Amino acid sequence: MRAMPLIIDGHNLIGKTPGLSLQDPDDEAQLVVRLSRHGRRLRKQMLVVFDGAGSRGEGLTGSSWVKAQFAAGNADDAIVSRLRKLSDRANYTVVTSDRDLAQRVERLGARVQSSEAFSREMQASAARLEREESDVSPEEIAEWLEMFNNMSS
Image (cartoon, rainbow, N blue to C red; front, side):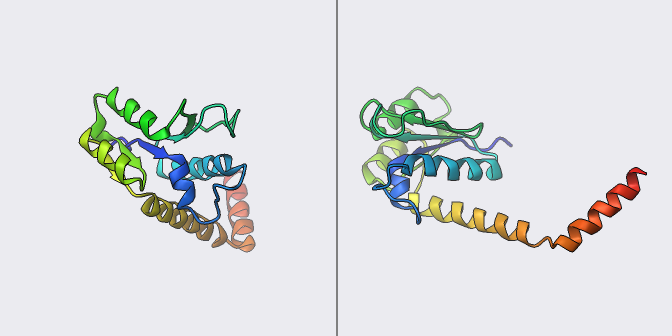
């Protein structure tokens, strides 16, 4: 089954994500890094849309999982415009806590996930990965390396 693509209201998510601030000049880049990691873990394609083309974040790049876009004007309108062009809108989820945008998205047949819920999901996923990585002791790594070296001999 193909993972459902996400379209993210970028500045809305920044405002709902602990450790990020709309006052930080690098907030968009920091969000894209977090989304890239999350997208890779989930194996989901994401488009994050920010207000204000040509403002902060010029040269902002994404990853194979995340594409970042600055809207020519309002990100909400850009998200709705993109959805209107899609024939498979029901396969998309828009991440936002903006009630007006959520209603517009639902009228078009796409799903909505709140920025708060998505932020919690992103944090939990990062914490799980950190625990999994820290659960391996240096002794276990040495043991595995020895085992693999013996297998190749």
